[in-house]
Image 1 (tube, rainbow, N blue to C red):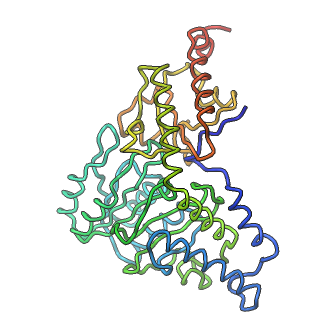
Image 2 (image 1 turned 120 degrees about the vertical axis):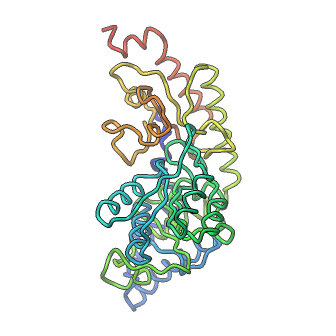
Image 3 (image 1 turned 45 degrees about the vertical axis):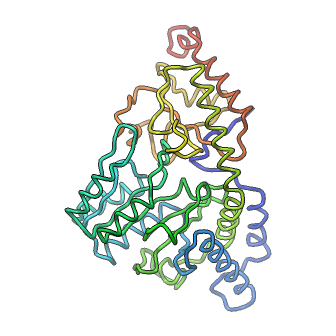
Length: 387
C-alpha cells in the first residue's frame, strides 16, 4: 500500500488536465509566434487560457504573464521592482518561501537595497501592527507577504494587508502558491500588485506558472529575446503547460467549495485521531486551527527516534510525507520557518498535506502505522538500543 501525503510539494496530475494537454503535445504542435494556421491555433490556445485565468481571478487578461513556475514569477516581481520601479526598501517576513527570501538577500548584498522583517509570533502569525509601524517609517515600500505558508499552512489576511499597503502607497506582492485553487481569490477586491501561481500545486503540470501584474505596474523583462508575453518574458510559450494550467485552475474553481470541505474533513479527522493516540503532540503554527490555516496542511512535531528519521521510516512503509518544504535541503539546514517559530528542531517535525484524492481510510492507516512505530519496543529498536 502506498499513500501520498505530500501534496504541498506537488499534486498528481488530474486526468482531465492531461486530456486537455495531449493535443498540444502532438497534433497541435505549432509555435504561437508563427503566422500560419498551426501557429494561430497554438496562439489561440495560449490566449484562451490567459482569458480563463483572468476571469477566474477577476483580473484582466493583459495582467496575466506565463512563467516556468512560481519561483521565476517571484523573481520577476522582485527584480522588476528593483530595476524598473526603483524600490530600495522591502518589507517581508522571515517565514516566506526561499524564492523570496534568498532573492531579497541577493539584492541586499549586491544592489544595496534595505530589507525589514515584520515580526511574527510563536505560532507564525504576522504582526500587522508592526507592518504598519514599518510602513509609517518607510512609506512607499515594497511589501512581500505570502497568503498561505507552505510549511505550517498559516493563512495571512491578504485583503487586510493590501488595504494597509494602499494606505501607505506601498506596492504589495503575495506568494499565493499554496492557496490558489484552494481558496477564492477575487482580485477586484484584494488590493494586490503582484500575485503568483504554480499549476502543479492544484493538479496541473509541473514547469508552468504565472505572474499577475496589476495594470498600474510596468516592468522590464528578466529574459530578453522575442516579444512573447508582451515582451516581459521572452521564449517560446509552453503551450501544453499553459493549457494544463488553465484547465487545472478551472476544475479547481468548479469544485472549490466541495474540495475545501472535504480537505477540512480529512484534516480534522487526522488531528482528532492523532490527539487520541498521541495526547502530547506539538502542532506547529496554526496548522491545527481550521479557521486560521489551510485545510490541506498539518505540521506536527513527533518525538525523535534516535538516528532514524521518521520521514524515512514512513517512506519504507509506503507513506510519503515531508519534513518541511520539499524545495530545500532540510536535512542539512533545518526549517527556517520552524526555527523562527522557536520550535524544537530536535523533534521529528512532519508536514502532512492532502489533496482531493486522499481518503479517511488512508488517514486511519497512517495513524495505525505511527502508533506502531512509537510502541516502546519499536522506539528502542529505531533508536539503536535493540539489534
